[in-house]
Length: 81
Image (cartoon, rainbow, N blue to C red; front, side, top):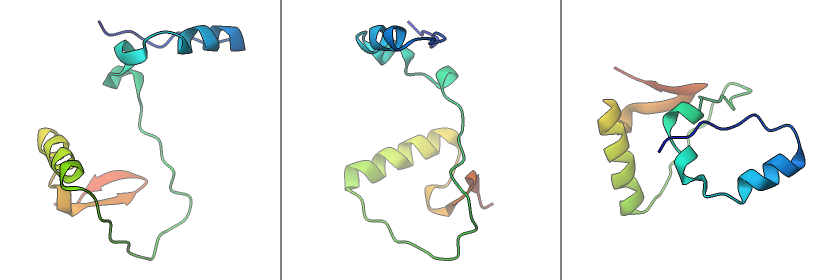
């Protein structure tokens, strides 16, 4: 069952929420894109990851219709087409 995060007003309400099973809150309606880009980037980084993680990335990107090796960060993720 999908649940919407309640408005938290006190520390006690937050503690009570954290005592619950939060798995029903993990769906796309409870998340929004956040940008952590503060300055332009001028360097490239190569990233090594496990095969399992890469397969997960490929699966998620395929579902979204994104070619995983043509994605670059700039604000939010954008796709080179």
